[in-house]
Image (cartoon, rainbow, N blue to C red; front, side, top):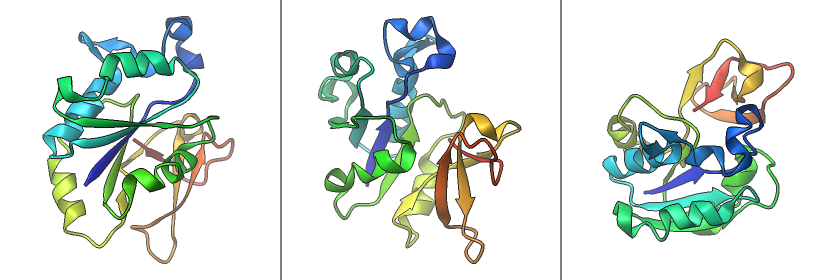
Length: 172
């Protein structure tokens, strides 16, 4: 199994803090925000991780994580030339993923629950991918999942910060 950490976006809502680096490297309790994602994936047994980077200080991300060996993982960097949303970023990972199952983790999220149970459920399923969703009160601020009406466990589409959201299920 592989992991993908999305490390893109401009962090405009966090300015001026993001004038000098990507929001995912902002510290929370003395760790970069996205380090929690990396550690959660590692704890769940995922050690082959792709980090999606763009034009927002990619050199700082590479300097912080390097090849991943200091964190006990292997990191591959995948470049996204423009912030075109989550589904576009995932499509860019096609070669990295190959035929493996994968978990997508947003680098600016800090989850309070261990991923191990989700990983076990995922590996025992026939699904190609697993994305965790959470109901939110303000879906216009998030990537929102549209579920398939015939198969509610399947995501039909992900809309990035829609003005008129079709659901309140945010990608976390």
